[in-house]
Length: 314
Ligand SMILES: N[C@@H](CC/C=C/[B-](O)(O)O)C(=O)O
Ligand SMILES: [Mn+2]
Ligand SMILES: [Mn+2]
Ligand SMILES: [Mn+2]
Image 1 (cartoon, rainbow, N blue to C red):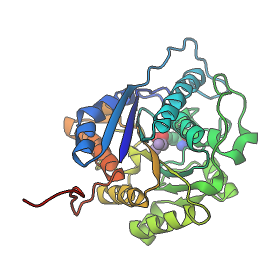
Image 2 (cartoon, rainbow, N blue to C red; image 1 turned 90 degrees about the vertical axis):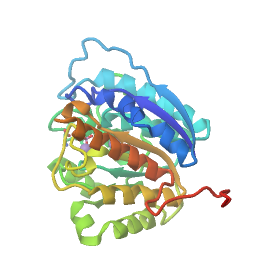
Image 3 (spheres, helix red, strand yellow; image 1 turned 45 degrees about the horizontal axis):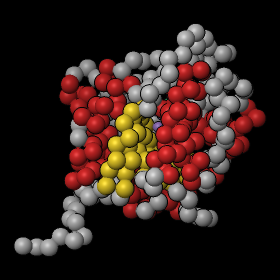
Image 4 (tube, rainbow, N blue to C red; image 1 turned 30 degrees about the vertical axis):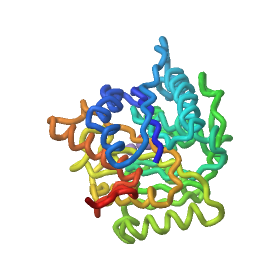
């Protein structure tokens, strides 16, 4: 595996400070060293620098539109570069509004993508349906072809080109979906494995069906957008919008092991790690270590163990 890492220390898609510390915390937990130790070639492209935007007044109820638009335009360019350099891209957030730039930059390099969105939330509110105006609850709406008639013009958003079809999206882990989002998911016929389906089918069947579904027609590169709040707060409490009844650590890892074995993972987001939302150091390290382990699972780490192909027994 050839991995390109981008840090996106950005928090303005939501109101809670601290999530901008995610990238460097995940690095400090040894992500690069651990990926190298499991045989990956790793290049760390560093952190994207974001411009300060003054007087970023809400538009309607959409909060910080100019900062979010600008940040994602820069992130999009960075992801595009990583993909053009031939790596699988790992985007470390930062809040989930960053999926706008990550998926846009990925699509600029790879055209037709499938998106696997692992999250307690659907993040598919439009600017007009959002109950909070926080853009981390809206990223998918800007990206999906079928929703574009519902997206108003926003400053610093004109660069975004819709790049994902509803039929190429699968959600896993949903358990806190707004009524307006639920209507959109049903209207567009988007495939959803909520925690009900995880309980009913088991994660193995969920992943089998997910892969059958996204590969049913043509095999597209996978963009895995992983919100750490998909995991149960008992594992990942240090996050902005925790929701009880989440994925176990084992289910979370199973998802990444399975996606890795398809050989089609082309980009992964790991977002919403927020140290300021952990009440103890243990809560923070549990959250950060889970993020690291999930990423390691994306690049071939198996719980049964691994050994190098060229290993020679002494
Ligand atoms: N649906 C809520 C919650 C958003 C949650 C965003 B997250 O999944 O990126 O954490 C909203 O629109 O504000
Ligand atoms: Mn999210
Ligand atoms: Mn979430
Ligand atoms: Mn995400």
